[in-house]
Length: 294
Image (tube, rainbow, N blue to C red; front, side, top):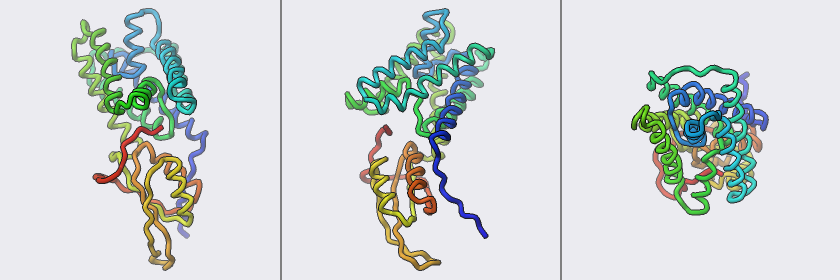
C-alpha cells in the first residue's frame, strides 16, 4: 500500500534550529572569506569591519553587537514590539557566533585570491541568509532602518536597501582605498549579487513568485487563514475528482518567496491531508502587490 505523504508542520524548535544553522553558515562566510579579504558588503557587519579599521583594537563582533543593539532599540521605538522580538534572536546570536570564531578559530590569508573570497563568501552568505529568511527569522541589522525608511518615509524598499548598503560600501572603498583602490567596492557588489541569487534559490527555488494550488476538505478555513496571515487574494475553483467523482473546491493563490513558509504551515496546521502543488509564476499581470514581509 502506498504511504501518503502528508504536510508536516514546522515546529518552533525546528525553526530556531534552522535559523541558528543559517546564522552559523553566514558567520563562516564572513569570518573565513569576507573579513580577511576586506570586502565591505553592506549591512551591519560591513559597517563593523569599517569601524574595526578606524578604531583599532576592538573586534568586529563587538561593533556588530553594539550596532545591532542600537538598531533594535530604534526599531522598538519606530516599528513596535513585533519587529523587535522577531529581530532580537538573530541580532544577538550572529555577533556571539562571530565572537566565538574570533576567539578560537584562526583566520586564513585570502587577500591574494579575491575570486575565491567573492565566490565562496557569496555562496555561504546566500545559503545562511536564505535559511534564516526561509524559516521566518531575520538577521536584524540594517533591515530595521530599511523598514523605517519604508514605513515612515514611504521610501521604496529597493531604494532604501540600495541607499543603506551603498553608503556602507562607499565607506569601505574609502577606508581600504590605499590598499585595494576601487576594486574593493566592485568585488563587494559581485559578492552581494552572488549571495542574493543563492539566497533566492534556498528560499523557494530559482523563481521568486509561486502559484499555489490547494485541494482540501477545509477550503474556508484555509482561505480565511491566508487572508489573515499573508493578506493574499485566493480564487476558488469548483472541481470534480476523476477517481472519486466527488465535487471539491480548489484554492489558487500567488505568493512571494518570503510568504511560502507561512502558507506551507497554514495548510499543514488546518489539513495535513491537503493536496498541494506549487508552480513557478514566471509572468504576472494585474493586481499583485510587491511588498515587504513583516
